[in-house]
Image (cartoon, rainbow, N blue to C red; front, side, top):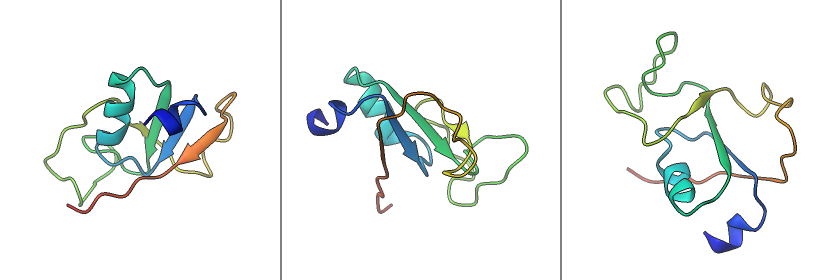
Length: 82
């Protein structure tokens, strides 16, 4: 986390439930996270996390739809096998 934190603010694309972003935030890292279909979003079904709740705020969007987010220095994606 320390290695990633030095590039903050961070954007995570494909955040799912926001688990990794929540750990970053607990560590004091400035991070925004996006998922195309965040769990619990009233307009989008997420079949990977149908009954899941987000660990932190996950915004609706993808890597093409959020180019207006200011001052982003790095982006990362973490995949977790469930």
